[in-house]
Image (tube, rainbow over all chains, first blue to last red; front, side):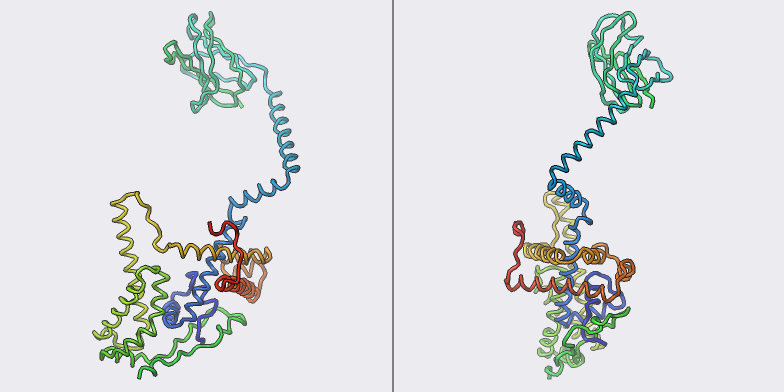
Length: 198
Length: 229
């Protein structure tokens, strides 16, 4: 039998890990024992202090971890510049090789009829003809939007005997796109769809 | 007469020695100090003010300790007083039939007072939130500037302790205090004996206590520049 709570009992008590059957006896002891009351305060201070301080350590805090990485790089400016330059070269090499693989241009003749979407291979530029658009008047505002409606390209296009023609100069990644042609009053005259294959 | 009831409690000079040698599973619950509860209870029942004084002398600090831990310092003395009024009335009304259960009864009264106070605070917060909506945020009633400073000092001391120990020791403390892994799991996974584990914690605690004492006596811990901001 013992006269005071052990370190382990104090620690378990402040961490809420005491066995349920022991809690009443521990608390009754604490009611009359100033020394163990002090022990509880000390154990709690230590446990809470450790938890707070350890939680700030890099391994326990993703933000602190990122910060320590940044600090590491900031202390090595030459290495950081070297790594940055290597990444840039890699990026350019990747994109230029992909650029070379693309066809120079793709011609698309679109009609605003329901049915299968016109498909095309990826290309550097797209020469688009809107076959059933007005053959005269204009110029008309044309817009290419992606599948979620974000504008990829906007331009003015002239009407001709084959319809409205324009060149989309931006490289479009694989996916569905829609071409909208607007009248002079900014109302949509027609909308056309096409798909760029993988 | 009540001097006998208030004989010095039986206590060891040092903290439990079994802890030093490596305690196996299941600590013995400590013995209670020896008081003559029958004498005190009978005295209170007879309306003897000295008996009431004895009761207060024995329990006041402990009751205050639990109330302070759970409810903070607000209205502390009033709450302590309320607990004693309840206990004395119960004794005088003959509700405490077995004097040896006095400690258990006092504990129950304190726990009920804590629960009731929390319940009232919760109800008030709900009403307050209903009426005021989000004009004021409901803050933790246990927070106050003094507690905040103490918490910051505590964390700073802990940081200093951690800065002075090897990474492996930090990992052990991290597993125990942050990840809340059991002592068995930590010892098993890191190949530690119970004594190694205990020793590591003891050293860290001793250092923590030493720095805390130095702070308390003004012997000087230099805090980081941003500490008091």
